[in-house]
Image 1: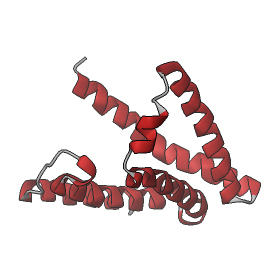
Image 2 (image 1 turned 60 degrees about the vertical axis):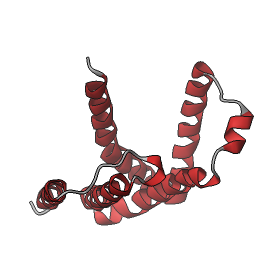
Image 3 (image 1 turned 135 degrees about the horizontal axis):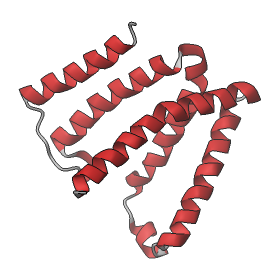
Length: 147
């Protein structure tokens, strides 16, 4: 299997997992009466999982971690924001509606990141064709929520 196919399938699986994560964690938050507690539990499970994989793959040196640009660590805040917001909002707004707006935000931010090569991303200019494709994807996601 070519690497790009494996990458696409992995990201498809990750995409499938996002609404499942939203529904499961929203359900846990509702059951516990605390979206924040549900998010904390999710992060404990995620931390344990990643620490296990890190132990199997090898730990980078502390020097490498310390010298990494500090803005790169903001990704953790974005994950926390996503998990807390989806866990709190999905039971009130619906998983589909919540994920729709997440997808819309992903389309816009991914296009901007690629266009400007932000955060070291490979530059992929926002052409008219690419803009039309993104608009078509956004319209498709919107239509799925109208049914």
